[in-house]
Image (cartoon, rainbow, N blue to C red; front, side, top):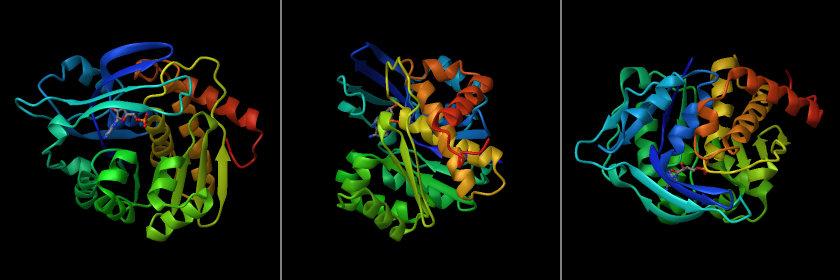
Length: 306
Ligand code: AMP
């Protein structure tokens, strides 16, 4: 099995009440691919600038992430995001976004990336998500994430992109904003009427909820006593969720989706323990499994099979 992701590859500058970092490796595709790498073969599609170094690529390569579809743009600068969080770590305040090399990026996927069974359109301009979806047309399951910026500035292409995927993974406030529907159950139903058969509403430290045609399932966030930087939690959730579905499930049925919610929760929880990718870059598969089993035991939920 294999998984292709397109999304931002970034330098993030982040301040939280617990510290700050300048220009650390980040981006939606980076957080996603590191998390997914515990379960399956994952390849990243996207551009970087000349300022992107071998050290950054090595972080991905060390986790076995395929980087040959990362295009280095001569004379270009890598995507930059700057943000901060107050004590409410559930809300990211964006201070600056510079698309840089994403401004005029035209994705061209290698044969290998096109042939993936599963596709994740991580948060980036919806027009780019659609171009990648069109090239990766053999993928049996495609999922998409986005954010308020694109809901506000590129609503029509975003709605078109959502219609082309099987699963939407979005913050709950953004699902309400997208559908202009304050009730989450109705909002999820409205998303499904556009095309997707599953909707995951991310709810920060409170966890995530899964809506499908047939069911509803929710998991709390893993209870952590030390949270330093929530940046990338949503992407790590998506990486654990889709990585498990691609690498460890024969069928994407209700049971598999629920178990995948558990792995998503676990990867997100490791991600927020330290800044940027620091924690996930040195995580081990055994630690993932231990925390997944702890989550099962804590929630005592029969529907989250071993
Ligand atoms: P998350 O905390 O999971 O929602 O995602 C945070 C990551 O998304 C950071 O690493 C940022 O670099 C990246 N990011 C922030 N804004 C954007 C944007 N407008 N487009 C793409 N990626 C973004």
